[in-house]
Image (tube, rainbow, N blue to C red):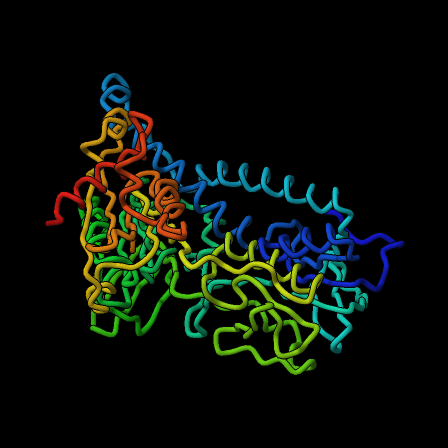
Length: 471
């Protein structure tokens, strides 16, 4: 990573803390607007948690595992050969290759836009001054007219769990797993926990998934949540819902989980994946009058400005939606706010959910439960992947697409997809939902012509299925 040079200025128009998607979006927008900008990054490479510990490595792992599963299940490939097998530590190499490519690409963005990267850890001295602890232990001071906090989040670590134990991991440290477990306990069945349950089970590891809630991923449409629960169960994942730990005990060769219900479980290792917290605790924010909430998050206005008028914040550190794609957009918007006094854009109403389990889940808009509670007269259109020629050809026939639409206006109200490539398929429906002046209609999918065979054809099948229910 490029670091400061003896000629690096000590004052900038804007200093951005953190080089993840939010920081990158802000830096690119501000440098192109003619501002002098510097990024402070405490890690040795740019990209933030998204690139190094979250989105990119976990999805690379997921892709590798899903291809192994696809090969082993396809008789065309596996009929005359032995079953493909890999371990978690082996496929980590693939993930790191992708991370390296992403890092080089993103470093190039800063280099081309003459945006210096100051390597070190930042903490505020006052409203216009920041102190940076360099990697060699020395300190430098920088001043700026404005600051953007884009420090992201990290896995939540309760104080009564010993994360220094060699067999107890969080979603960051699991990427350094050296041994190959035969049995893993995953505590927390949210998005991250469910994704890793799919990955480890796909590698043949015995998985116990501890869900602290009564349903898996309760924010999803119930049918989609049930589909994931069934698919994990059918593949051998043991899901235990409504549980909470009383003690997590590390042993020489594994971990013993003590649950409040009285159950005890033993495994080779444990992945704690229950919540995240904002990276604000080491910024010395109290000196400028900012107080993060209990989750380390900051409050901002529509221009992403905090209570202090020259300090802004974007990304995970401000909470919902806590998505890499949204953080990048927020970075662009805060650049507009700083450059012109007002953010010209805002996050769209229908932000899709993408969950990279095996198979994937993606949804946008309202669920059936929400529409029922709101007494909206809706109808349902469904397409089963097993009926699509493209899915039959590819052997990815597990899953379905569901469209919820208003019975009278035919306006699309929600789209829910379970199956391979769901996170790609969802964007077709999202694009139609975003149309104004009557353009958001399920009729679009009936009146347009799709390539054949494609997974996109599921929209035509689902639309016809739904419209046939009207009377």
